[in-house]
Image 1: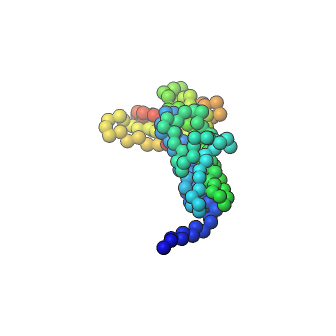
Image 2: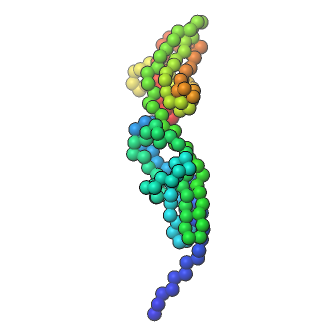
Image 3: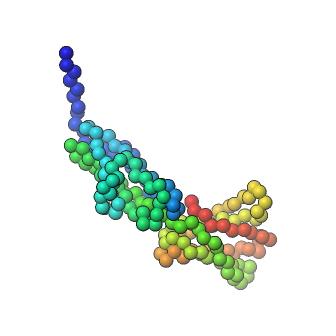
Length: 170
């Protein structure tokens, strides 16, 4: 007796699209894509439209994200019956928030400034004391400007006898 297997040809179809990410410099980050198709599809990742020769799996992983990894990534999925390209996913790598600089203003106000990564989101948080457990509350999320500058003005300082600030990332 012989066994006959019939494979119905099927062009690749993406079942999981990669999603955009933000990551801190040196942290791990990865993209995932998955697809169906007969015969089994092969995967090829691209960075800003350029083929990444060694990136041929369902996952594109960075063990330690670098600033140069900030780009748009997509995956071309191919089999003998066709190909499909995933949605683009953007990776934005930023430096950890450095120290904030405070500058006094008039009428119980001051501004906070810090250098950062251009267009990277930073979150300003505040607490009224530093006794554990500290209850940090978000104040604002600001994108650093195209030069990397980041600032926030606090005009309501009279309402708090003391406030502590820190910058974090989402």
